[in-house]
Length: 127
Ligand SMILES: [Zn+2]
Image: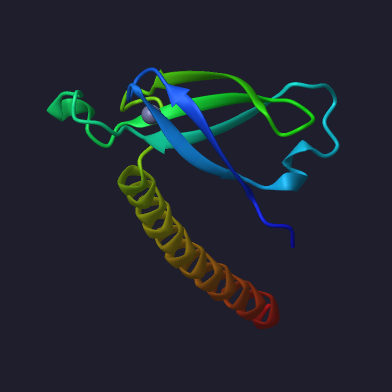
C-alpha cells in the first residue's frame, strides 16, 4: 500500500491549520476535479468556549487531481445533527429488548397454535 501524503488545511473554527494524511488513491476515479472530501474532526484550540470543546466539525476539503487542497469549508455541528454513540447504543438496546419480547410472543403464539391444532385433531377423531 502507498504511503498517505501529509497535508494541512486551515480551519476557521479552530482558527488553526490541521495536519491530515491523505491516501494517494483518494484522487482516483472521481467524476470531476476538484472533488469534495468530507469528514468530521473534533474542535481544537483554546479560544473555544467550554460548550464547544469536543464538538464535531463537519469538514469539506476540495482536492484536485494532484492531491492538493484547493479549498476547505468547516461547519460546527449542533449536538442534534448527528446521533451520538450513546444514543445509538440506547436505540440498539431498545430494539434488542423489543426483538426479545417479540420472540417470546412468537414462541407463545406458536405453542398456542400447536395446542389448538391438537385440540382440533382430538375433536375430529372423537367424532
Ligand atoms: Zn478545526
